[in-house]
Image 1 (tube, rainbow, N blue to C red):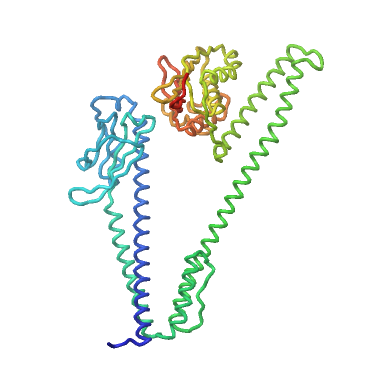
Image 2 (image 1 turned 45 degrees about the horizontal axis):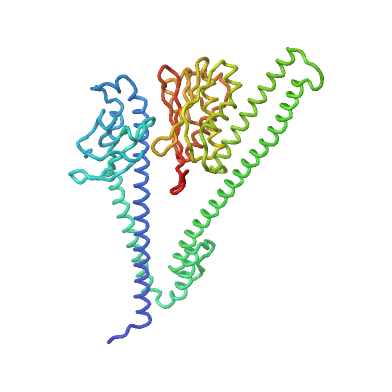
Length: 482
């Protein structure tokens, strides 16, 4: 048997290493490229679906959207033109609008989540994404959603072209390794060992490691290129570290600002309110009726400012994730009564009545539940000039369902999407004169979601608005009972 020389063994080993390195590089590069391009397409497709869902949310309640035989597909035509294969709008499980090559849209089962993506192929073998997006303001069980077919032919063509380039680059890298193996042989063994050591260090996270240079040959060029790549990786890692540090500092500054706001604003405000109350109680002597009215206005303004500050602090804590519910058994009737007492003065000022009906036992954070009801009652009274506010609670199908209904002006059409957004107050400019900064309903939504529930609103019969939210109902553990 012919024995290979050390040089031959080196050549075979180096060639094998070069081929393996090139193949690994090509495979990883092709895989990451494919993932990146497909993710870009998914994001674009999701954006198109979100846009169509928003348009459908505004269009379906219109007279044309509610008709039995709609004649316009203006919502989908502009999306289909050169963008998607087809687009559909489904309401209550029935296709109401269709545009494009809708024959591609194969029948499917009911939509079980707000957003779904499936990859399919046409009969001709063309790949596309079948995308479903629930229409906002419609519960999922209504089966009201939009559906689009997003083509993948372009991205697949680009993947094939880039893959060919990666394969060519990998082959060139392997060829260079073979040539270097025959030219350098034994002289390359030492530098190669050092290079392998550096590769292992970088793979472990030591981006400062570099390949020693100075051989004056092709290996030095390879080392220089490798060191350039390592320098770029190290610079990127350092930049990411700087960005993370800046983000940490910004978050720290925000926390300091919140703490300062709590101390520097609330502390003197409490003092102002306390002195106003002392003056009203005539501790320092009698006051005139005009002075009493002024002091009451001052105290009311202080209470309002305190409410705004507490709302901002509460929302900041929610954004920072610093609030988590401490759940336990809560009797809804008790919490509703406390919330009604909190807003009783506002009801008396406007001549409104508050009616309470029903009862429920909830598994919730009592403080959060009370704040939810207070915010909803405040909101109802701000936009109600006469009539009444109704609060109901009931246990239904393992959930506690609360409703707060007013007889106010209601939410103007076209502004429904603003209701739960922070610092937004839905409606025409005249509503901007009403006190508040638009955080009450945003806090309600966050608190309800922290309990695993949901909140929504609808137009009440006879005018006004009905806000509904759900929370887990308390269930008596097995074996317990009277």
